Length: 474
Ligand code: ARG
Image: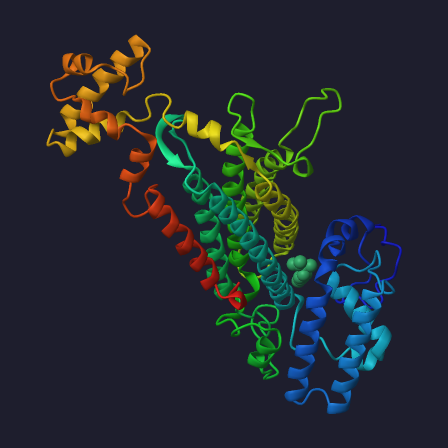
């Protein structure tokens, strides 16, 4: 004999055909109020829009509509004030809110609101409304981070640093160029959120359980009331698809990955060996045992939390895979991972921005190291090519010079004219003028290159691109 959950199922959304209430075990498994309760403002907004549609279709008199809207507002205030909370016996947020509505408006009026809708079209709509709101907040936080990066790039000006590939010295670049390389992916994520918004803005409301509603409700009106664009074209798709949730989780994971790569550089730059950057006291932590320690915890947490963001996406995809149409209860599992991605980004982004905004670069040290490791060897080859030497041969000559200098403990511009000539008749004293970091940087003047003039253009292009993401669209 299954044990009922203790509280009666009075007010239950589906109790009538059952003689027994849900077992305590089922109730515990099934309950979602511990995470979906935060959807109550959206649920109440949906209910108000639905009430208006019911009234427009003749199922609520104008007096009833007025009382219904008042009761919903009253319910909202009671929840805001902490006076109405979900009970153990409330299966989910919808369940609890209908109980609350009935308490305030009475069973007769409160009982009318469910006509023409189902928790299936409700929840599919609410999760969109929640994500649309948070996408705006996250976009604003990302814009702040991009602004902080641009400010640092402006402060860096024409300061050079070693550019690396495979973590090995490759060619000098501007510090500003390196920093901006982390801003562009963030801008693409802003654009992704903007594009996602179009797909997220369709309204599942009116789709009912799966087949649509039979009351001739003006679902366009409902969509409009909720700030959404259009009702979905297919009620089964509307109630059963969650690609919009997965896509949001992907953008969140991608954002994490982009922060994590930046974080990795900061962690390395802050080591004694690199000594490129100092973290601000307010954005770093100490050690409980080693008094000298200053740890890049924000960067490390960015890297760590990215694992979580990726996990949330992977979990969602696994949940959605193989679900038959239409709604299945598995879909309740869409919320915790995506809510977690939202919360993670909303706590991570401000801290990360603070860390970036307060970085202090040792530009003198970076400039000293910019040509190290024979980072100007490509400039030797490029100089020869400009003299008409095929690059293949130029590469050989430059390689021979590097190997000579390495043996002799010299920099590339330090051999005598005779030593140059002994390596190749093509190497003349004129080469030395090209072998400066400034010359190397200025030469890389292709669009998107690290030449100071290009980097200045890049800053204004980036700023424009961010500003053109119309605030309202984000
Ligand atoms: N709590 C459910 C969810 O999050 C709401 C929809 C329940 N629908 C149902 N037929 N049991 O998906």
